[in-house]
Length: 622
Ligand SMILES: [Zn+2]
Image 1 (cartoon, protein in one colour):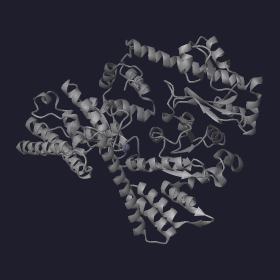
Image 2 (cartoon, helix red, strand yellow):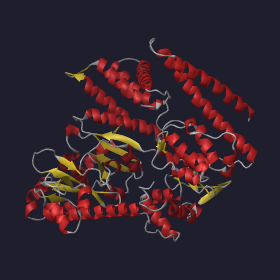
Image 3 (tube, helix red, strand yellow):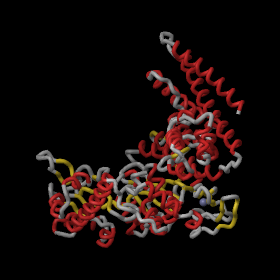
Image 4 (spheres, protein in one colour):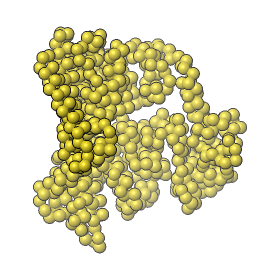
């Protein structure tokens, strides 16, 4: 969390949370109409509804909406409702409760923060330098290029466009003259290292039209540069720096977020975004030179209910695009709650959206957006295209592709709808297409399982990691929620949870940290919630999942009853973990080659069986 909190010490964050009662902060946005125990209910500020499903817990100091599944602590609420960053929410709440945020005493924190500030200043200065060059004699070619692309001077100014002259040291000289030191220059992402000396820096962007990249709040965090002739590469972008991660930002979002439209359009390039905005389609953003990432999608779903992606219809990078779609489908499955609808649009004749809007205007463009395809329809269309030879569909190729795409779709209804289209193309029954898609899916699971076994055979210790990743079961969540409320009773438990009781991956990380906090007597609902920052569970932001479970867990007031409940969960989880391990070893023993030394594995199996018997007995005695 250190990164997000910008060096603000944990104890100050705790104080800010403590001094901003969730009921009074949320009460500024939500009218509570119903109470249930310690929970207050009202109409959700994040989705539209007629009956209240948004709730806060006054004793746990968290919120959760049973409709749209948003949840978190008071800081997250302000982030969501004000659409601001973590740090801005903290500052807002600090001001509200009159908590003074001190200059961090930690020297390294202070230095890091200072360095980031200097990098930001250097980028602003660089943007000025590029802008001045664009509007000087040196920038005539770049201005001619903009004129050719019909970008007005007003638009160029609004987007802060500039020009990097074709010089090796123009920018470095300029920034040095403004007092920026070598360490700032070396880390701001605008230079590459030369060979002449230790501090020899070469301007990264030379002879290029410059696009400043802004964060959501409109601050320059990086640059993209386009070459003016046919040279290569056409675009260069800033590398990752202490203030810039391309996976977490989208070009143009700072402008698009104020469009007040529920739909955001994602195009490929900077020029597309600028043309769209100039044409009045201001709800357009661009992913920064990568296929859309999950983080970008999370960011987008804060601002949009619907996302429309533009894909080139005759794209050489078709395969990469399809892999991206697989992510979208499976993410969609896990995020049905957030209801971010994703669809795909195409410009006819393989044109850029930019070209299209210049030729046909904004209304024709909006029509294309409105007629966008669902992800599955798009995939099936591309299966058709990929399998068409000389105007005829090769049924074998089409079947393979279509069934693979269908196997990605976890939603049965959508899968069946897609299957009926594929069945029509193949002139077969829907049932046989569905069966084939299922077979493809099983095959995939089987292959993954085999790979896990292969991996373990090479390892000395055999631990099944079938659950590696971000899955979590109801029992393990419930156990941690109960533990978050037992306080000092933890030390007197006859059996304590251990990390391996929990699903490998994210859940185990959270559990390990929870157990540590429990031992230090620092485990509270709020502390538990903060362990979910920037993680996902079962495909949803962990923070939301944890809020949901915390909100659902009722405090058990009878301490004996509470203790028995906790023990029961611990035993259940442990039995599950060991049963899985046992099954895994048994399967492994089966597949071991004759030559292998099976004795160690057999012994291990026996030990596990014995231990399982022991825990089952303990469980009965609770
Ligand atoms: Zn809601």
